Image (cartoon, rainbow, N blue to C red; front, side, top):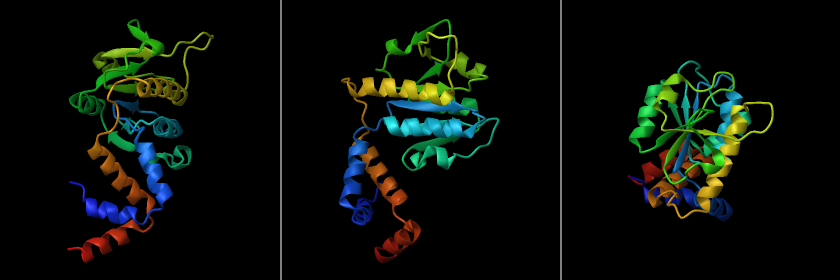
Length: 219
């Protein structure tokens, strides 16, 4: 349960421009799509994918770290980690189970005999888009449990793209189409309030001291 009085207290600390910016950004945020990256060894690639999620309005990034324990590269992410929700999983099955239980279809972004071109991808269903490394691709476990396969059309000699480039192309395409559709893709009012509170806390310096003081004075 969100403490609305506390939210209002924090937002009174923010400038009017900052509060308006939060609301405008949240209008374009979605959980209709979510993104998952699997065991990406080069952390700057994961950070770049996070940045693409933030720029194009996807609120959530799922990171599977079954083989490589990594931290988000804050320099590459350019502050995106403050605005995107990161779900970390230490197993592939844990990530898949979580996403499927939340109603997402699993879409593997990889060339496959039953693949779908990006331009033909059905955006109506809530989808979790999985990205693997350029070298190894996605694991067999993800491919076996995938509900569909998606690829970017290419006309050159090179048959693959860096994960961060692939993610940016796909995310930009499907979110632009989503915003032009009649699909109910926006965050709920409850989710918007939750993000307003989280973003305010992420913005205000010395938030721990301020929070402690607020609740001490408002017992």
